[in-house]
Image (tube, rainbow, N blue to C red):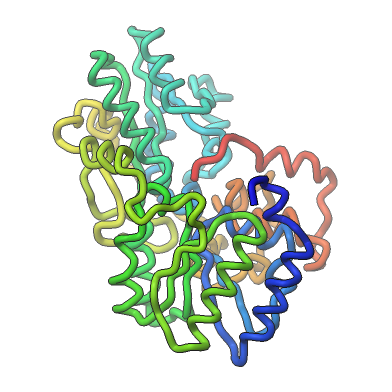
Amino acid sequence: MKYIDEFQDPELARRLLDEIRATVTRPWALMEVCGGQTHTIIRHGIDQLLPPEVELIHGPGCPVCVTPLEVIDKALEIASRPGVIFCSFGDMLRVPGTDRDLFQVRGQGGDVRVVYSPLDALRIAEQNPDREVVFFGIGFETTAPPNAMTVHQARKLGIRNFSLLVSHVRVPPAIEAIMRSPDCRVQGFLAAGHVCSVMGTAEYPELAARHRVPIVVTGFEPLDILEGVRRTVLQLERGEHTVDNAYPRAVLPGGNPAARAMLDDVFEVTDRAWRGIGVIPDSGWRLSERYREHDAEHRFSVEGIDTREPAECRSGEVLQGLLKPHECEAFGTTCTPRSPLGATMVSSEGACAAYYLYRRLDLGTPSPKSPAADSAALEGSSVV
């Protein structure tokens, strides 16, 4: 298949569903790691088309959702300072911090700008040498390489008024943490294909063997998801637990060597806090000592910020697959895309946002007065 619509072909989808139904003999719980996969599943009703024995659990693979509140509050503090131009992808502007969001900072006079590439932020820094320009660098193995390249370029060009507020996270340690949780029900993983397109698959065989869990690298179109489910269920029924690449059109075993080299040059692995989950050892990156002058946390000394998570927000349970979005009491009532309690409702990859956009009538939740406005609230350049 060469074109994207071929990966949404209804007849091929029916055949894959028939194969899954013919294979499954008992209940299995599978986790799709990426929020992009969650949106495809909910948008196309894949979870409802699967046989009842196959349950899909939504994973923590939304970069906006897992950015800890402390880092968001640091972003708000930096963006509020005079002389700062704070640049971010659009996804982050409506994510609530302890008492406000970046949109509100902009309304209060802060210079907060939406960019579509970290290089846009570097260009702004070059054009404004008398201002400090900060880019909000969040996301997984997919967005970390271009952000690393931008810092590398800033150093190479001698642009000293550019810095990065870093909150990059890594997927394999998160899978390890999920499997070690005493509440874990996951029996198989649909691994995020775009992460593997950068990092390859070398980190997964040990995980699969240690936890005796199949890991199938999966893409993002409906047929990709169904093929990932089919291969995972097949392994489970056979008692196997290997790494299988169901996304070969994008993923090579070694990933992208140039991107990995850039990561190794600019970043170093560190422990990271995940919102709603806590600190996971070796689950993130920070700028290495060589590039420390471009570290916004170091440059602006934003330590000791008092953060307060809203007590009624249960996004942490959603991110761990312990709660479906519509099972939260606040879903669709006190928490909506226009008035979110947590990032999972406002991020374009958030699980709560997916349920709200695509299944709100099925779930009996109030229909918004303006669906178009809600859709607009979830739009913006996406970080993955």
